[in-house]
Image (cartoon, rainbow, N blue to C red; front, side):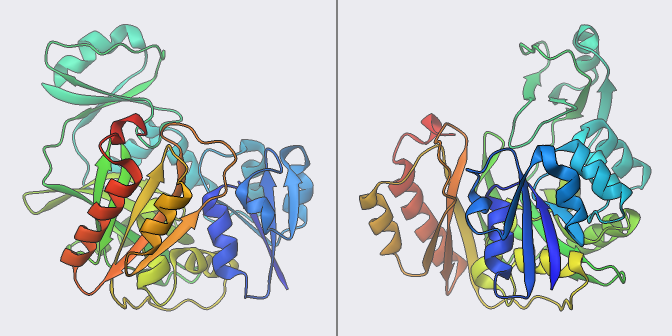
Length: 360
């Protein structure tokens, strides 16, 4: 029986195990504390202080998120067990490295400049009339990001370094979830449309026809010698694609694959990193998701959502509810995307009512 180690015990680790539980795999998780969601269903749980034992007792090590224990990542990499590889993670731990890598490999990105410290921000932001200042380290789900227009300087406490991006006046945002195996085989789900609020994915739906998205994902994954599932976020502006960022792991915008495809992104990732057989995912129907952010559903809200045709509720089992924290999501399927959008709107009103900005 193969042993897969997952660094991190949040919802993504939980769903990797849930979706692959019927396969002959022993799952180890490495966590900060034993209250994390994936601990409830893992075969063995290790605390971060025991990261060497965790790696030694796993055949392959993967991760649910890029901002996890660095010592464990380094040790797994040194033992040739880490998938995706360390370079993929390192690029994501510093936005500067990610942007420079994409630019150096001639992958389409918006205009950007680097600012090394806060004292030079005032002069640096003059390059673009409208832009986004992003802290290089640690940012995700809109964290560490500051929008500005010409003549205004947002209040920033970080000392940097920063990536300053020109504001992209895009038509819409999209994602594509793709997979690459150890033999270099490439597979991809059809792209999805994303609706974000304050830097967080609120809902998405697919499939979305988007010419060129698959080619970009393939080129990026080949340039990284990548193994596993990757999420690629895109801006679509006047028919042209720009890469916003990539995630070297399973991704929130791929949760719809839990209902709409022959295999979910979670099982696909587990198979790919372990070297198990992988085949092209087949799309069965229109599917989407809406995230539950910053609140725990009441019993009444839960029953209302479950009464809507084609819904499936996923609760992450987190102990603490707080603003801008993802607590779960609802998958929605339907005969048409019009039906999906209508049902997503109904669910959004059930969850948030008129107070959505209090939660996100």
